[in-house]
Length: 396
Image (cartoon, rainbow, N blue to C red; front, top):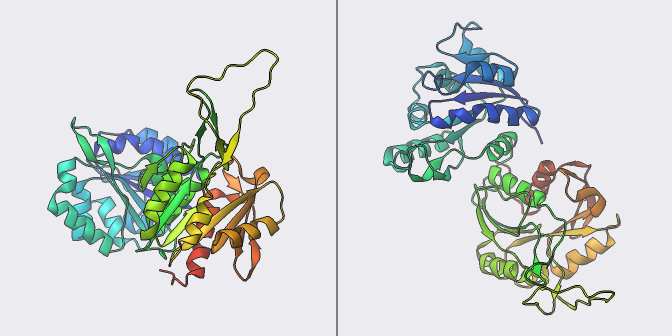
């Protein structure tokens, strides 16, 4: 994956500008060199010195002496991508109309690299037909529009219009060069662990963090897909830019996936589904008897991937096989038994909890493809690229 190494951060005059220092810190933590451009309206909202220290570089604005000749051209040549966060309705309108009346808009107009826009404004402004038209124009021009969040706004109301969270903006920026092969495709993603209650206090679950599921959601969104996630309780949540159906038990997950499956192009079974559940639920806490042994009877949970494999029509089904051994034979057996088109094989030692993993991709009538140990962001993107290739989708 070709990640951007140098990102221009355009900061406009929305109250969310106060989050710019945290965004710079997050981008730099991901290995990105950042330079900030402030509009005049943003300057009272965020400290220039804080931006300079955190970015370890100059901060540009119309109110400061230029550092370079023809500064907007030099900046557009320097950057691998431009990220505008927050992007006000005013700046979005200027971009859509091709207005170049400040350093940020002139730089955007001269840039021939990807431009990501993270809108932030009042709900009424976001819903206004003029803003909707401007957003559509930007998308037609090739801008990457990030979705807005929903919740409490600075004006005291609640609704859509909040700037997307810092982590999601960072992930989408890192994936800005992703091939848009999944535009128009609907992806159903099962992610995270499931939880099987034993009594009002105890549960049977597993160590899955949900990190791979979150990475797949980010990558699929960056590649243009419409994503629906069905997720168990995870320490790494599904990004709020995608539709997420939250469940707890394996049976709940099976019902949700069964309902969503018919309208799906690609189904990815990245969830760590509990193989067993207690045969009986104790309505009161099970007490420990002194010196005694407590026996818990278990019964099998539904094999969700196999269930979906039997109902497959035109869907491309991707399974996951987490094993304690490195051999691929067991994973290949699972792929054939469950009716999967592709299987992702990983081991407990290389995958659980951490941000990096080593996976092997298995296909029908094709040799296994081992991939090097890498960030789960790279694993997720590799999985989706290979799926696109197997489906015969042209790169966009």
